Amino acid sequence: MKIATWNINGIKARIDNLLTWLKDAAPDIVCLQEIKSVDEGFPRMEIEALGYHVETHGQKGFNGVAILSKMKPDEVNRGLPGDDSDEQARFMEAVFSFEGGAFRVCSIYLPNGNPADDPVKYPYKLAWMERLRAFAEDRLALEEPLILAGDYNVIPEPHDCYDVKAWESDALFLPQTRQAFRRLEHLGLTDALRATTDGVPAYTFWDYQAGAWQKNNGIRIDHLLLSAEATDRLQAVEVDSQVRAWEKPSDHVPVIGRFDF
Image 1 (cartoon, rainbow, N blue to C red):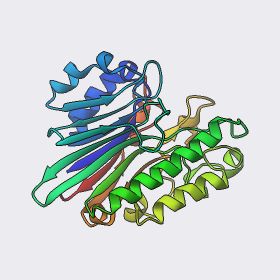
Image 2: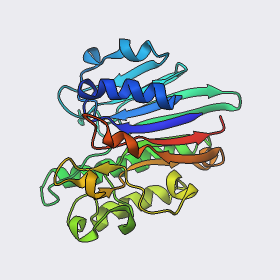
Image 3: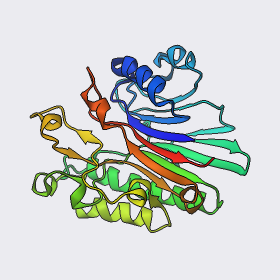
């Protein structure tokens, strides 16, 4: 089974690219982020025509996540627990059945947090990460395969960016951000890409500015974090970087995990 994450950066602007990629890559489950669409405006008919079930958690103009799947989920939960006042559409969980039981897949669009000295944005990022940690801890107690897939807006290590000096004061790379990511991993979660390769670079994002793609000035911020039960079934991870060279691309590319489900 192929389970992917992709920050699409606007579903309506990238629908042709998404449809082409779905036909070419044939993933079984896709977690999309930054769909930038309300639920009723999501172009589900075109995607359903390719054999996918569509679940969305949208928001007008920005944010928004979706889960596309070749099988219908048994359960769908929208919104990250822990703050009833948080109206930003950044999280969705779907539960699927397989022969050995159930597995859970979450689509995550973690807050950017910039500018880092903003009194609201960066504290919101760190608080959201703590809520995610609490959620993951709760789900790990179920001892089921769990896949936390998404745009984490976190550069885990210096080799995950083209130039540390360019990112050292950015909210994506600050020590507090990376420490919060480590707290997630220390629950027993595995970074799927690093579990299957130590090759660098393995970037997933290239800015639209200053020829970043052409210069390979990228960063790795899109991740699959896995429970031990999901890690046991992990076979390989691929980064579909060629998608960044397509016409009207997202600034992110898909990351695909292959699992024995």
